[in-house]
Amino acid sequence: MLSHLMLGASNSLYLGDMLFYAIVFVILMWVIKVVAWGPVTKMMKERADRISNDIDSAKKSRTDAEKLAEQREEALKNSHAEASMIVSNAKDNGTKLREQIVASAQQEAQTLKQNTQKDIEQERKDALKGAQNDVASLSIEIASKIIQKELNAQDQKQLIDSYIEGLGKQNESR
Image 1 (cartoon, rainbow, N blue to C red):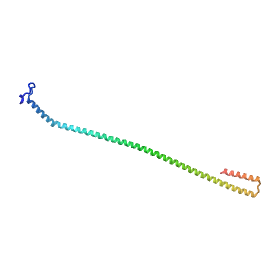
Image 2 (cartoon, rainbow, N blue to C red):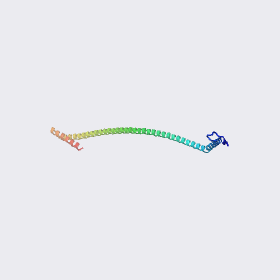
Image 3 (cartoon, rainbow, N blue to C red):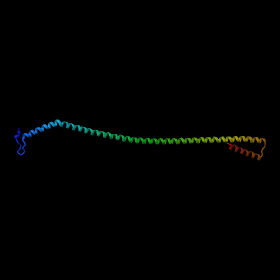
């Protein structure tokens, strides 16, 4: 058709051929746009969206992990504080219990001491009463013997010595 028009002598390309190639190129580009460019663009957009979602998900997972790590660290600090408080309370309770036990033991010792002193005092009183009874019976015995016979100094000394020996024997038997 337009093959007789030449652009240049040295080129040997005709204007008609160039127009034909340009029109074919435009049609080919349009076909590529319709058939290939749309799906490729759609695929690239989906891929970009998926990558964006993956990045957002990773960021969210990272922030969640950081929050969880902070919560665990805080819980660990709280558990350390709670453990320290429990140990402190246990020490305080142990100290109080020890003081109560010591006070109770001292009170029991004091009560035992008082009871022992009362028992000793009672035994002393009983011993004095026994001695008084022995002296009274001995006095009665001596008086009855004096009444039966009149004593001289030697007899009186012997009577007192025998009385003292009798008291010693009675105390030894107890």
